[in-house]
Length: 400
Image (cartoon, rainbow, N blue to C red; front, side, top):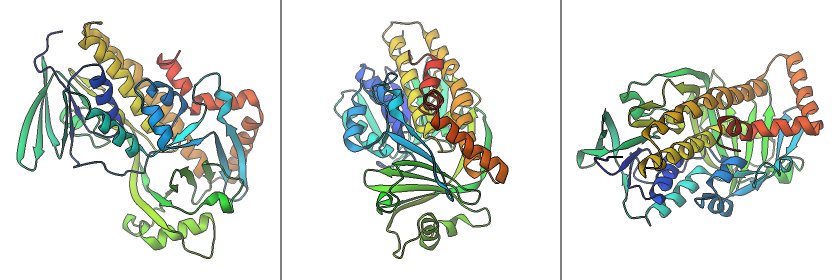
């Protein structure tokens, strides 16, 4: 394949962009990574890595690195705020389907930091922090990007571009690609505390989904704290909800105690369910949140984005080195977009509906269904195949 620039541009240096860059660079493809931030941003919104993601990242060394930095969670629970534990699922049921029959809890910025260190060891890699992309132009033989820096605008060229610049993606917008879907009316609050919930709630595990018609929550243990994700009441302003007093109230509602909680992390954000109309414009591609976003109930957004990166870079590597025709790139969207619609968005939307259900009769049926599935080994196994994303990756052909 004739190349004008001998380089691939990656816009956005979060986990999806960093892993895409590493996979390409390790395959001998020069990459330039453009990131508007000046360094790593500690972002606690995503910390769950599913079993097949760990399998797929094993070859590049990311899995071993994350296992060293993270926390292995072999069990997950569905709970009810009033009734407590409803159902428990042991991922060891997947031992014949994956080399990693567990969830790994590891903050995404730790993966990014590890990938940056690996990228700095590879010749031909350019890490351009403080570069905010403002325009993307696709031509027949490449892609031209304009980025704003502290010293003014710069222009860079590449043979291909991967946009991994998040839900508000400038790449997607400048390419004129629609982002259809919806945004939930409520904000989501994420907070972190070092209080050990297992010491006071001995029946919980490291991954807990708790249903409640007023204030459902997701409670996750990560290596150095516990994270809680919960909705913000529509009648409360976001600035008010993120104040210490309100977070304390939410935590006390979860587990009343005499002492205040030590809050070490807090953030508030909007959540949407959207999928890009197209994952490609010529030589420019979208991956991760730039291509699809969803609510965090299931840990599928980050994992789905990494699956995008693995799929797309494998195709680019083969085309770049002459092992396949350029037409191989046409299969990226065909393989990845249906899973964003049918698996990632569908499952996370269903999870939210189950947790927040207000109708008493429907709630009772939902809780009974969780119990029934957990009590039946074959049903529990099928449930874990879906929630772990193994079934999704098999449907798309990325797993055997």
